[in-house]
Image (cartoon, rainbow, N blue to C red; front, side, top):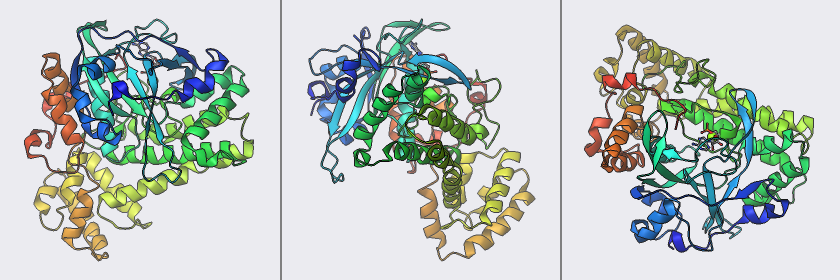
Length: 494
Ligand code: AMP
Ligand code: MG
């Protein structure tokens, strides 16, 4: 199937068109000038059943650049509001995201036999009625970051929106300076945000909240359509998925940076990659967003902000769910978060099962990593060689005795398991990535792309698509970051 000829569905449009522009607006994308394909994601294309040859075609490029022809596309922008940095901000978007339609993909494992619908969305293809005073564009720099990071997250096993293609152009976009306009084709099973529900709740339109919830359930959770408590099930699912997603962020060292309620997905995907960052050394105080002066969205705050945001979602659903059900759904967040986090952290140090004493072992290790400024990703990867190569592990610490005393407890703990050193290593290498998208790596790809060289983007895509494997051709990205990486600052201006 070729995307530019695919029969897209328009379930969102069909569901809401009779309500005027309450939920959406029809829009005309404004395409990029002299577009060039930076990268097409063959792994995702394959999952979507797209013909790989079509990715190299001119028609695909023009479509991805926002030049939309053909009657099966019906570009729309979805409306939503949200809380930004804890403050109600009113209507926010979609200011620069345009959904072309939904691609039906047959899921062999799905017993219902119904295809799964994937939104095909372009980010950066011009203004919408919700753009406010902005230009509807995305710059190449931030588009490269979103494109690479969403695929990195997916391949780390973390729920996320995906990215199918990245296009550069001669369209000039004005930020602090003139930059190249770009588009990312974002693909997801839902683009409905917590803020989509808040939008109608705060406008006192409970029937519109209900229509949106009904849409989400019939599209994403058809098995609950006839349940009396289907809205509660939708919320509970969101609570559990969000708890798991954030536990995975914490375990891999990912800082989202802009956890506003408009950047939280109702299906629990990581969405809206802006000033995100993976930290180098373990640092709970890490703030990746240069504009976040108070540190509201710092690394250590992410789990509690997740719950704050779910509270905001629950508030927006008060017309559909009883108070006691809202409370009981929200109460599931903390135990689920802790359960997921502990399980993942135990597996990162090679434990088959988390036991309550392991909390001390894990916390002591994190403290040592922090005090000694040890590189988080490199350390966990190297720990797989514990007992065969302890020197290289120990040498990462300034306080070697501190490490030795932890290592003694660790040695006793792993001796309680039946795993051989080789088996433990294999399991650890499957959960501790060799590669994450550090800021300086994205920056290297951005600088090369600004010179018209897209090879670094594609090299990074290929290694991040199998982050647990060794990639001899990308050895330069397996070590600690260079000194200049410290100077990189990322803000919201994208
Ligand atoms: P963000 O902080 O990226 O989540 O953006 C908040 C809202 O502003 C979203 O609805 C975006 O669509 C919108 N927005 C951000 N940048 C632009 C832009 N250049 N043009 C139009 N809307 C934008
Ligand atoms: Mg956003």
